[in-house]
Image (cartoon, rainbow, N blue to C red; front, side):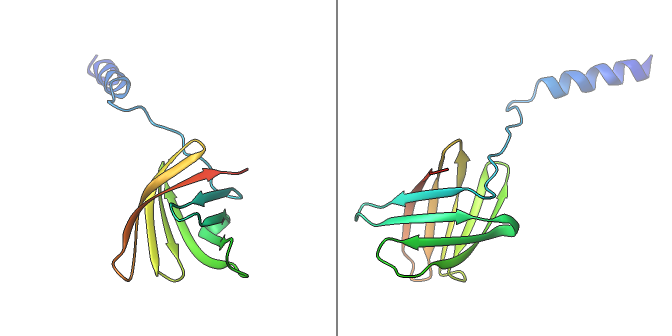
Length: 114
């Protein structure tokens, strides 16, 4: 009887969580873009194992970065830590806060391309 009551309590507790578990967007192989308030356009390509490439329209090369994801939370490191982004992935949008080694801070938003 105690076993049955324990099972029922567990089922009730699992069913009464405040926020249901959300499935995370798979970033592997995805491409995202950002346009900032100055008109700069940047494309971000997310690869397996946390590898990232990004390229601004005004550059002739791509910079490397790293990314990690835990559920809907994402962390991005650009150019060996020059800039760090943290944000939330929601469907076809990612947004959050960023800062760089010069002390600049800003809000950002990426939109999914593929």
